[in-house]
Length: 254
Image 1 (cartoon, rainbow, N blue to C red):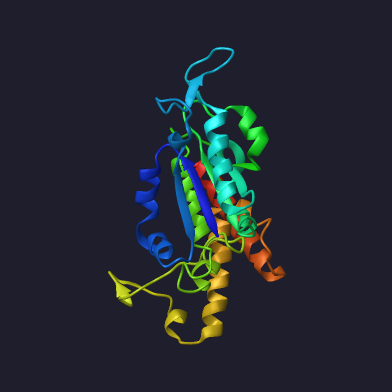
Image 2 (tube, rainbow, N blue to C red; image 1 turned 180 degrees about the vertical axis):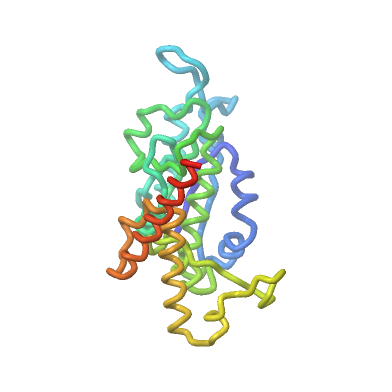
């Protein structure tokens, strides 16, 4: 997958994406991420990419033409139009299921907004969808773009050591991840669950699946309705949710 990021802070994006797992994956060619400085596509000597809004109001707005020129340059390089995403608090909330859908594209371009946003005309002309990382507003689109790029990159073949590294994580299959433990066996009087020391792979997998159901029911009961569960797992989840509700009611009374 190739990911292109249109940004006013390309050095900031590069500094994050050049480190750790994603940095190593880029260097070995497992994923191709390129950051484009939007001011390189400005058409005046001051490299201006923003202006005042029609109709009045506070703040500046990102102009359409530099964004269009940058996107067209990327499309020309690729020989086709990439799937174009604008990071915006108005967009669909990013989820692991959304990431799976986006992985079907070979080329994704991400636009980082700034100031009071972007001229609607370039969004209408080029952007395929808007994506949000949560119901809050940041000072710019770089952090959301980095979140999207990182979460997409780690799903590409060869980025992580094994597909299991992400297939067993929270949200991938609609549930939260089970609890994890490392050495020592006993830490300050607390021992690891004995099943994890049994060497019985089937029992360990059964325990992990059950713990995922329990974790999700306790911490994100809203996810249970959408999760694919057996009849027994759903009964377990509903019992946990019911017990939590009863406990909360009891605490409120006290």
